[in-house]
Picture 1 (cartoon, rainbow, N blue to C red):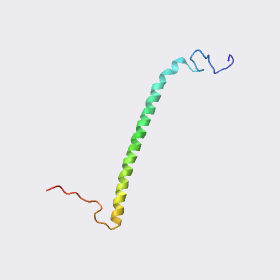
Picture 2: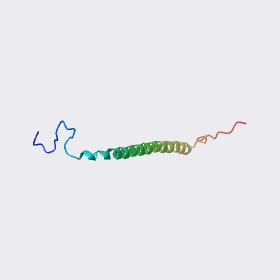
Picture 3: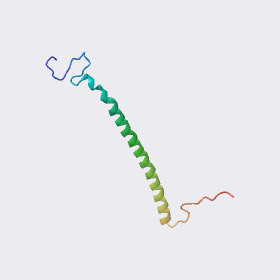
Length: 79
């Protein structure tokens, strides 16, 4: 429409508003998002690892609390 203040010309490629020279900031935003994504993946992996270790320790404590003696077998080197 001719009187639409934010519409822009449909054939011009300009979606309405903004400078055509404002296109240079997209790369930094993607880089920041990628850094956050990698950081979140590392945090999730570390959490899964720590939870596994805590679960193993909990099983060992449950075994010892039950009075069993062979909870953590020690492997001896072959002779």
